[in-house]
Length: 408
Image (cartoon, rainbow, N blue to C red; front, side, top):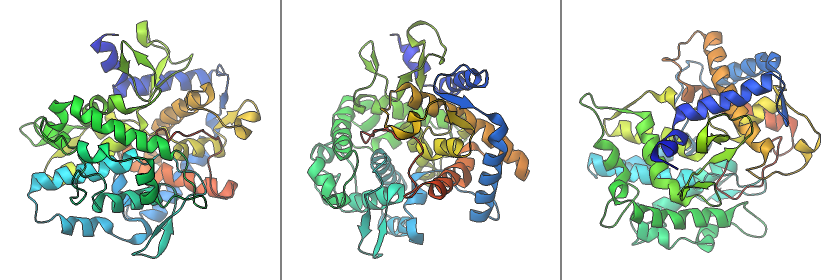
């Protein structure tokens, strides 16, 4: 596989084009797993608009990022964190914010419906993404990812020492409070330390740390203080490539969140491969705020795509836009590489673009005024959670994925 093939599979435009190819096949009735019923999109748009207006009456919608989850339960942990790091210079603050966001996002795969995190300071329990965010926030503040176990930082030395038992303590996991994919999360962080050492250009040669990625990106800022979002994603995909387990490899390169589907299109070695890079894109969105704190304006956010995960995807299934062709699709668990899951995720990405266009029209906003990441936050993610709770006790997804802690 050539460098150009790798670059192609890491490009947001390829994600968008190949997901669109699968949607087009669905509209033609050619997919084996899911029927596409675009006549049901009005219900999706109506729900997203209602949920968005309820949460943000002034339509001042924040980015879809990890930072919102750190404020779960209306507790502004971000403000307290900012006060704790206020004495650091601006660049070091950015490095620390990068490290908090990266470690938290990489721990943000589905935890299952039984897991909860109890936060002593607020005396509240949190589950799902908010629980994972609050737990990882406290683990970071407690120095769990630091080599000296005292500093708020994430470096290779500290990540080397993270194992499943360490994370179990941080997440309050027990027989009575089980978490899906705990071992996968621990392995991911362990591989992250090795990946950082293998990429000194991105993370620094001496005592590599995740915050080194900020310095790498700062060096690419133009004379106007701007940085295209695609460069943020490109750096993440390069730096994190070795950490993903059991993925497709071509020419010795781990492709990450890339899967096969017969309608993906393409040619040559990349034919039939559809990339998603869900966690990496979620992370790119989550690095916008730290970059802005450092005085860097991230541009062209809409070049990134919607996120191929179960809240967004569940919205389209639960509203009837996507209809399983067989009953067992809804009753049996599926592996991330199964055709039905790849198909569902691809259709989700393509339909999020369609949803964003229709939502903007419904509320009278342009793409510049309401970028895709704000539609997600407003938005589709919350609407997917809402309808899941309406339809299923516990609010789980309509299609079950066997999680290894690194997908969804």
